[in-house]
Length: 278
Image 1 (cartoon, helix red, strand yellow):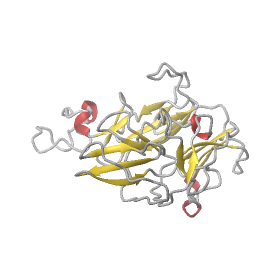
Image 2 (tube, one colour):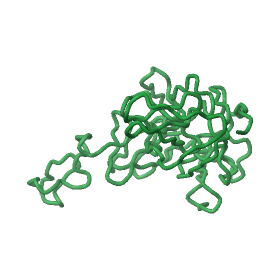
Image 3 (cartoon, helix red, strand yellow):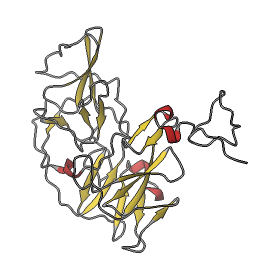
Image 4 (cartoon, helix red, strand yellow):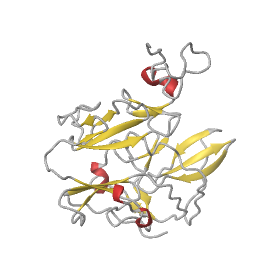
């Protein structure tokens, strides 16, 4: 096991967004987690694009004792490492590692998942895996929101960090008219302060798409809109800021169709399952 070290505190100049990648790492090397580190300003992505637990990673390393399942079946956090968890099946434990930059959140029983670090309380779980290799130079982790000192694309950059081989013109966005409100598919950030559930100002509030139940927008610093989406078959729930099954979101229950038992034709079916008037 490599010697653990503290994550550096980065300068707060410009923002880079690193969306989740399916990078599976079997390394047991660890980095010490710190609330004062680079993750402190991570956006509240509410587990939209990082909510899936990554399966299939078995970790083996010196000095690590086998995990004893507290229950026959379930998902449980590691006692030392904040991005490591265990899946217990019939009393047998299997180690699983979150994707690089994500942390294991077990705050809601039976809804455990790997998410971006915002609002994750690691407690005594002070270690995380070493940063992944081969990621964009603007990213310190494969997933997350990180400040960069010298973006080289244009004067005012909000960029999506992608692997070098996946670079494309769409991966960078430059503000043509600084200070002007940007509109994307009929949506414009309100440009005002938003108070979150913990009575704290949200730096990057999230809003539903005005006409598409599958998608939503994140307003970086309240003014720069970026479009994201739920997996196909799910819809965005504006009340919980998560992706859910359509039946759990009344206003979008029939976004993918009204179903065979509906009196609406396919052309008449509204997202809320009502029939459009001809």
